[in-house]
Image (tube, rainbow, N blue to C red; front, side):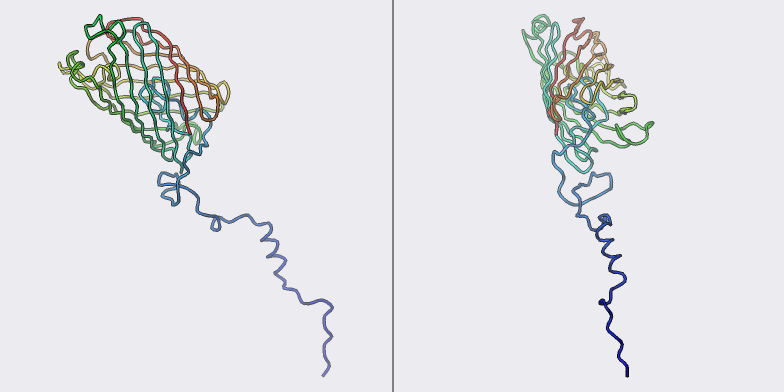
Length: 317
């Protein structure tokens, strides 16, 4: 029987070159990727793994600064932003110190806020309000200082400050439980209680194409001078709906200027006015932001023309 000659080259597997090419050029498949770090607050639902602690990725200034009550936002108005520079799946942190110098008073506040997955914010702050010579005039003592603690929570329920549909702002609901540490005195001044809770609904949007930030907040509150003079009145005045608004223009990725307005109840009948400011914020680094403002707080405890300077420093991760 004739024997077939051996081929000049060993036989090839026809599919081998194709497989090799696919291995060399095919993109990494999602199924082969390691489980990414995330938490239950991630946009994609419940995930596993350790959270990315303090590895910020937000655009500068889009986490806001710290309000005088400790939450993220503007200087005097609460925004729908979440504290910290974390992205979804991460944990962020911010801390602030704020000083307000007025003709007859001095304000100091400081606190920390934690953001979880760019969805939930928890904050705590302390405010000290020095009455200076006014204390003696009011009969409460020269340089008497009112103190207030604020415990805040905020939950983002829809939208995004920067991304998504331009018509849909970031929307957040929240609360601030405030406690005056001068219970006997604020009751003597006519307040009904020394602690209470504010409820807020905020909407915030940065229109990148116009470099404009717009914010509006509704606050349901019974606080007298934010709560420094207690809450409500013994005569029955209580909760009322108030408005906070902010408008900012981004000069660059690190600088923004703008103005704010905040209405306030006058439960004690002391002629307390609404608050306004004109501010400028600058991110010195990715983690440190300084804010300066001219504030007009009107009349406080019958002393009018309380206009002065606001200075705040915030560290965020």
